Length: 301
View 1 (spheres, rainbow, N blue to C red):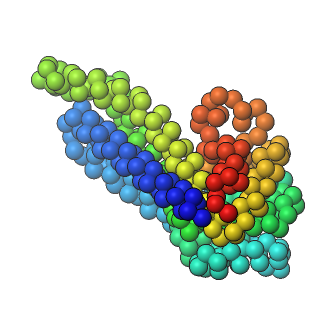
View 2 (cartoon, rainbow, N blue to C red):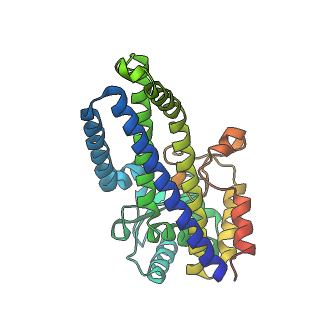
View 3 (cartoon, helix red, strand yellow):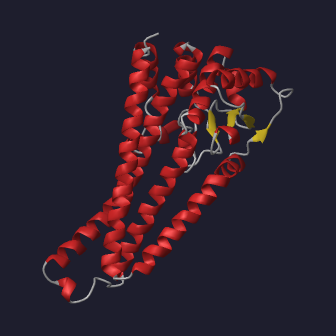
């Protein structure tokens, strides 16, 4: 088992590195914006906007996601085997039983959402229940419960907000240059012009970098949840087989969009979209083959 714990520790450290990098980029963009406009009021407004967005996302992100995917709450009598799997694995993880939802989609997939363990949701597609065996279902549910236990559901919300703030500040900087707000005459001489050029370059690159960082964090959390799932089930082959079936299934998912793709256990995009160079570059998930290989070769079981 030491390999599993090493992977968890490594992914946690890398995730915090990316979050720190996000914050540094935001601070720099804020400084450039204040330099251009010479007005701190804009930063105050941006700060208040980000706080309000964070609060709304914290309290209502799960409801929004469930509504957009058309997921429906179920009781134990509706899917007793699924409910027992969720219940047993939640006990093993030492957390309250999450609410269980069904996504009316034929593609086998699943996601977890909720701000903490007491307000958590596990949602699985109808196709997942139809196409997976019990041990495979247990691997998937353990993966999603691990996301909740590791606070990934909250982390992803925070990262989305940070990426949004980076994009917002970058857009403001570009608009400032477009409107000719390049500072006063004194700023146009000496080091001032260098700051403005650096700010313009940063404003162009920052949104792309923010997206890549967001995706990198999502990929790292998938590896972490895979490793944590093994600790819960003690059977890595179950999740490995589930990922194989999910990856091989070509059924499209109508509810899949760019803003919610990172939530699912595997990329919900299928067909030609999923294999292009840009799709791979901006993928929210590591390759299924790599995840399966790690589960089978490096878990230590």
